[in-house]
Length: 591
Figure (tube, rainbow, N blue to C red):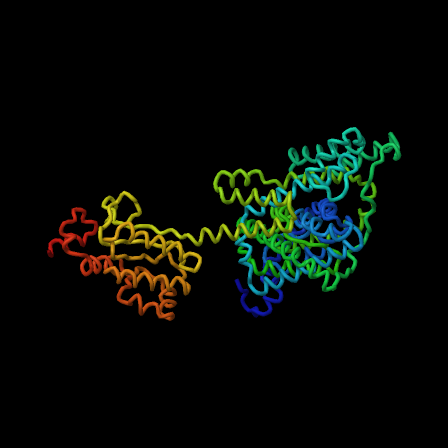
């Protein structure tokens, strides 16, 4: 909704002016508390997600700073919080680890370059008002992919959790095999830290849900590590740690503008863009339903794009909407996007104060945290729901899940998207075509689709529920033609067009051909309740001249009266015992 006395171009340039009237002292207090909660939550998550992405730990924190501020101010959602996420981190690692050693300078620059590319693509899609694209990506794809990502996260962290050596890039099933073979080499001290972290996180999350369980679990794991080192010594325990983080604000960075690198990363950038936008817009809309806010997909595209473009120059890797942090933000009482801005600013302050202490954080504790993250990604509730309600969605979910595990992850995303589009096209290309017959049992003999009702032997009434476009014409033509093949005496047909919102050139040609065919067999084709836009298109294309404007009706009673009275064979009507239409009695009496 446009604010009064504010020019449209100014609102397009600075969309945060749209919600400026919500910035009140009361709302600012609520946003501050929500922002503080968000900053505490993102601290362990940022480090954990950076580990998943193969980035140095501080980059996960940087991705939750400048990008989060830009996305909040230039997006449309009041509650969406952007930053590093599990899915984006998994895709980043899977896509770039084959090009360079994770955490190396070359790897980091590739990540920055990919972030810039993703941001530009997102911005262009939003500027072109293509936010509707995310509607064509099935929810089953997202659930299947994230479940597969959860398994991969688990596999990548087993070596840190158990203190054993497994080569980087080992397939997940081989990780399990290697772990079994090295049971006798498990570092008991490292495993103790991992188990303590995991159990404390589970217990805190279950019995104290309002307490930031990740931070408590990290503290528990770190304390257990310190106790073990003090009792048995560093050489005996051999506990690896994350290492100290730089206590600094996000430094300026420079992505690569080498065309060769950009060309190689383009398929990855497209896949990440599709998945990141789907994640962000889906989260924004789901929370918008709860808060009563309308979310603009196009504006979210622009906000996400600008945030990633900015992030690529401020040491952040691909950021997108975070379900966990957005949910926490909403539940904590946030009223405006300033809560996300405050969370990012407070995260900067927290990093300056606590970053040096990361040197005592064990890798095993991080692995325990990531096990918790991985488990949270498996949406058991929706998986069960999909399996029970839809075979096609179940097939898409399983295909995406297995592709994520056994194939290239970028390919898995594209495959899932293609399957979603295929399912959409299948459904839209087979519109329902229902036979309509007056039902004597209903008040005023309303028309019904009951297959047990007797039809007029000369007159067919069919309703098309779906648009007549090139993908649907073959199905509609075959069905309508089968009506005549099964009952050649039904030479007259009335097509109810109330469910047809669009007719393209091929759809118009079908109507022309059907009108000609009906005339050739001694009948007619009539149209009822044609929408104004559809009739306009048929007229412009010249189809109405062939169909005949006199064969269009806006009243069902008028249509039936005209067809029964003028075009049905009176000798057949005289012998018909059914009296399907009220007009049949008058027809008989006239004879």
